[in-house]
Image (cartoon, rainbow, N blue to C red; front, side):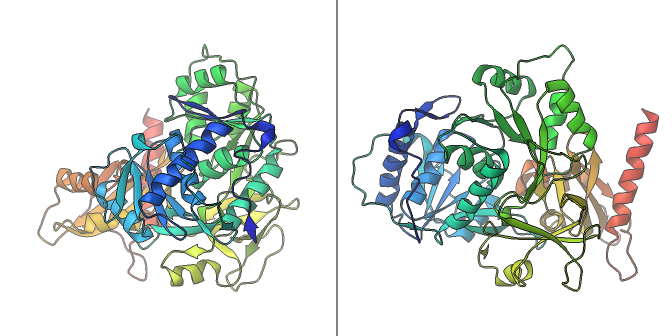
Length: 493
């Protein structure tokens, strides 16, 4: 099946409608389409074609979106790279993806063998040199990298069929129309921002406004100025908004709803947002492996506090027992998903792909319960993943860096409770026999090799680390210690 490539870029009915703006530039659909075509010509001149991969390492700005679309225009895939990654971290993603071209703000920094192109050098006027596009639903569209328990991020392969399924599913769930206007604040290296905030509104000819970063007062000022109808954010953002002084009372009447996802949020946060700002806040749930979202509380309908809502249209969400059987409503087990949104697999990782998809279901690693109405409640995590302000962090990657210090014998990383971010990275280490650990040196190593959000906020040195009955480090025990310390600190404050 062939796709009519991006038919929403230049349909006659809204060629000159507002399309996308950032803090420097505003484009109509016609102008955006021309920039995509012009950038695609530049990419083609640098060897990009069908089957290629283009890495895009930029902060939130229009050039990031243009570059992704330009890759698709040529039948290539795009891999968005977190611009805050260290050089070794970025080099892993760019090298593992096989990217032939890297679009970035600083082309002087070499990331593997990819040819670099400065974002500010992207052309804006096409010369008309490209043949008509030929894209299929099965063509690889995105390689989204997510951290894994092995300590190395792995590429989630999403094809155009996955994106189409996600756009259709989300668009139906939130009732998206041409009159909508999304305010994008989440980082565009996340599939959430790409699918929910960009592709879904653009697919129907709606508007998109892109913010480079989040600041509570500036964000609310942007709502007053731009008049968006919805936005998607993580719990940390909403915590910052409700914590603003009472005298901060912006006009947010244009917002018909907001979405919260990527990390668990307490029910009182939703109540606080709705009471303060007046618009409904709906919680959703999903994974990069499911092209973003699989459940969401309805915008117009019953919203259940503590629940992430029912399955989105076109998807099936079930609860599975350890023996592979599906459990009845009300029973606790692993959350599994089916639908056209489920990834093709992990790049170069057949074993991990088989583990996640081998029986025809996407295994999430999360423990949940479906109630009598089909609403999902997430109650636990099978894996050790830490969720800091909506960012997924896996301890093994950080532990590998800790273990690389010659003074460290044992290392364990767990999520510690935090009132703003939900969880933060906390490390425990034990020294080599007869040795000592230099906290400052170990943390300096972490800062040099890890993105800022992965650097432990605390490093506890212990003579030995606690073990369970089978000799493994007792991470639940370490988490319990941190929870007890947090409770004690709260009583003392």
